[in-house]
Length: 253
Image (tube, rainbow, N blue to C red):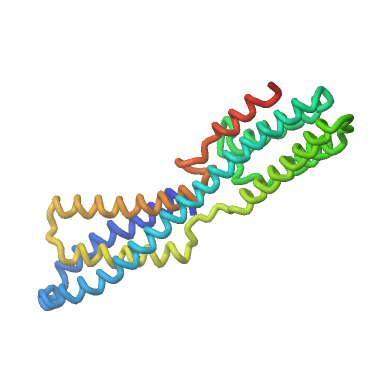
């Protein structure tokens, strides 16, 4: 379920719970709305509210951490790409084919993750990139250095290629983790209980309705952030393509 759908479900449960509570308020016997009943309901829903707040806080922190990890990974990838190109440039004109292969590979990644139109891929785990990476590695491996400086550069370039592959697979293994459906169901149930209790003991006037509407919207916004941050290439909050595009502009110079 995408971020907007998840947020809509939570908002529907929250604000729907308000109206359910207000409807029940007009139909329940007075004894159910007494001060003693309200105190017990307040204690019970306070426990639920605490659990919901803790879980939402942990999820926001986890989603933010995952997003930052993806962003830092692509920054590291861009840096190593520039370093690899500079190393090949120092080697000599023999690396022209390898540098061209590197440029094509980086452009493929950008077009895959950040296409000009539509939504891109979700990670770096696709067959074309694996094939291009293998061609690049073999082109560097098959170089024939004639002196110690070239041998050192070739060794460094191969090590950088290995580091690029390591970073790529680390990023690929960090799968998008949208909110699991069972968890969303439980969270929606908690929110429904909370806001039903709010509506049950609240007077029906515009000030209360607006206040509870804003509260419901805020909770839905938190769920939206969690879901959107866990989809770094398919949401409103995305990993920036600037580091990779900067690296592409530097290649071949």
